[in-house]
Amino acid sequence: MPPAIAGLPKDLRERLDIVQQCRPEDLERVTGAYAGAKINVELAEFFPDLPERIAQSHLVISRAGASTVAELGVIGRPSILVPLPGALDNDQRANATHMASAGGAVMLEQDNLSPELLASELGDLFATQTILPAMAARAHKVGRPDAVGRLADVVIQVASGAKSSPDQKGTPQQ
Image (cartoon, rainbow, N blue to C red; front, side, top):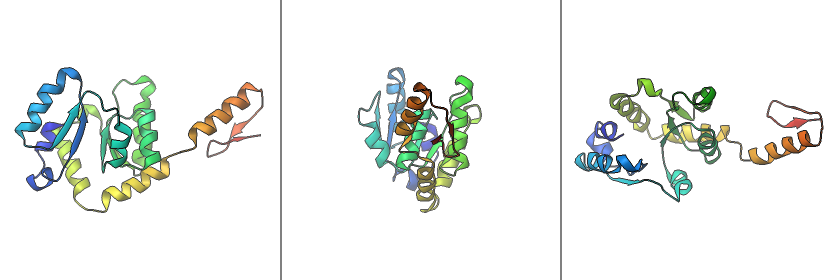
């Protein structure tokens, strides 16, 4: 991240407020890299208020775990998703592909990721004021705020022995 952000034009770098979680063993190195590039950043091993921070963000760069992608959809946040290579059944790639296909995210494969590629993607996303809001709206369309209730309904039906098959939206039908 720091080399990608440092590779952005100075006027764009100066407008950014970055919040980044780091592994404890990387915190000192990453802090130094951002400081050397004079980038405004808040780093921590863990943010207890991360949901609020994500909700206030203009762009999220993240892995593509199911709960993360679901949250991005429900709250309508544009993202750059980097699926974890080797994730079980390639589920993170499927999650990222789904959000990217809807237009709510850009998916970047870790094997191809470089500071230059990330800086280029960021530059493209920040180039026009309408891009990120449009992505946010598309991400929101993917979101399913009622997913927990729908899942509970399916579990109850299965547990009670009811025969059902989901409709196209995933709602169980009798």
